[in-house]
Length: 146
Picture 1: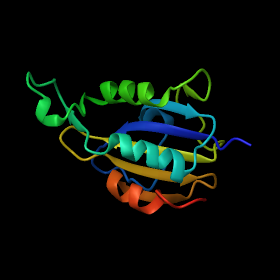
Picture 2 (picture 1 turned 90 degrees about the vertical axis):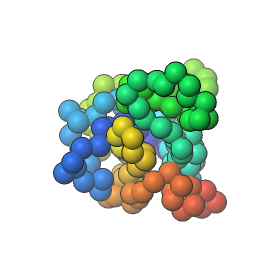
Picture 3 (picture 1 turned 135 degrees about the vertical axis):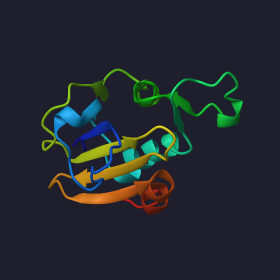
Picture 4 (picture 1 turned 45 degrees about the vertical axis):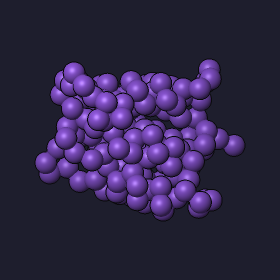
């Protein structure tokens, strides 16, 4: 049986709560993952990849100090994440933002220029089960089987 998940990439804005699901109009990019959506699998994969990313407006001429973990805004980060997740035909799809309640897990990746990436995870009951940075997510779920 598949453990389906949605990954929503959203721009952090003042007044938005990390622990509340957002309407589809607030989502920049939505990625559907058909299986292995558990926090101990997909959550750790996302956090490990996104940890240390620098979100900027314009790529600096010499970005070697970023250790190549740099994204020119939310669209650039979204494209890099899709590239990282897409290993084979199937399993990972881009889709227009829509109904969020049909999946086992819903992830929000909160992006803001010059700020640390934050992640929220909701379960199938739409209950927020995690809010925090990438490092904390890895510590919480890395060796934890659901």
